[in-house]
Amino acid sequence: MEAVAPIVNFTSLQKRYGDGPLVLDGINLQVQRGDFITFIGPSGCGKSTVLKLVSGLSPWTVGELSVAGVKPRQARDRQAFIFQDATLLPWLTAQHNVELPLRLRGVPAAERVAKARQMLELVGLGAASGYYPRQLSGGMKMRVSIARALTLAPQLLLLDEPFGALDEMTRNRLNEELLALRAKAPFTAMFVTHSVAEAVFLSNRIVVMAANPGRLHAEVAVDFPYPRAPELRERPEFQAKVNEVSHLLHQVEPVPA
Image 1 (tube, rainbow, N blue to C red):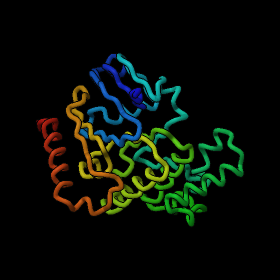
Image 2: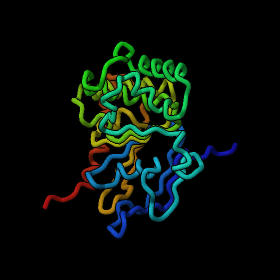
Image 3: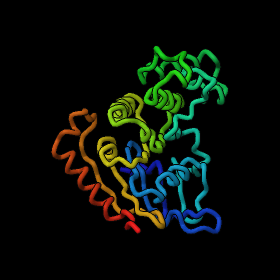
Image 4: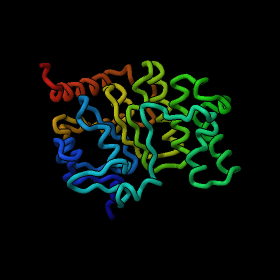
């Protein structure tokens, strides 16, 4: 049986900005289709840079990187990026913000209206479609951002600390909703967070990164089956996995001056 090619493949990758120091060094990593892989590590270790390289927003310096078998820029129509800020246009309603990627692709009006409504219903915001961003809570804005990303049915979803600015209760609820959305509209995910518990709840693989330069320190498999109920967070095996990842993080934390 022929092996399935990874959707993202890093080979001996290095990244530096101009003549500056290495930001990433020796990145060798394969992201398999269907993975939910989370990157965690100290500030400045290059977690967000990894996503920018995959998205084609930034070039690498040495090595190879492919997305769905082609260069990242050639795979932009197969992926979507969700940032920590919801990046909604304040003069557009939730409906029109979600329609925007389809409008930019020239999708006919009736089709994009229907698709945006479907995605807003999927994230539980059908009744808020006419609201402007200023009328939405932080969690609602992030749901709109997720709905907008899903309109294009991406194979790969890149998420750069999307819930980092939210309170813990809202974050937990959105974690659960994100996995529920993934069950309905499957995608491979590359996720960045500073929260160990969030990483364990969402992921099947966690990559712990070290800094100066950014590099892969360790990988942890998370074998809790999907779907994952909120009660998982209360189980001793969940806390044991949190402790395992936390221990690895302590190994790469910078020593205070």
